[in-house]
Image 1 (cartoon, rainbow, N blue to C red):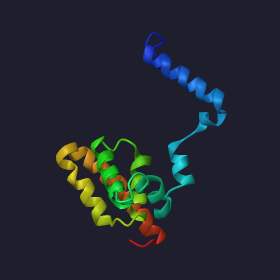
Image 2: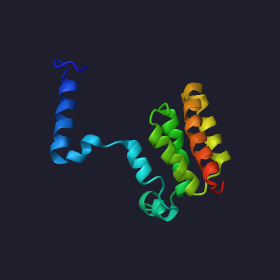
Image 3: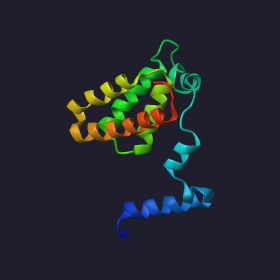
Image 4: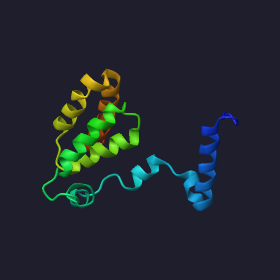
Length: 137
């Protein structure tokens, strides 16, 4: 239940009302729904959008996504949708399951075992889903 005297909660309620006024569809927006709509984008789109846009000699999509995965793990792997999408995109960009697992495991030293375990569980969900569908590893 929200506290009407809490300024932050008032601001959040106003922002939610404004979002509904601008686009009523946002009332039912769900990150999990977005995940189902567009589970991965092709490596070339990732490179164009997130990879070599600023520097043609910059990090490739695979490296950027492994770094993103490390960062999400450091934040406590709080968003299941972001974690699964990043794992799927890393795989699409050429990362192996072992590289993803090693990236997550490395974060245990900095983020702690609970964050690492949560992140690994999300990665396993993606790996298991690929195994079920028969996708290449």
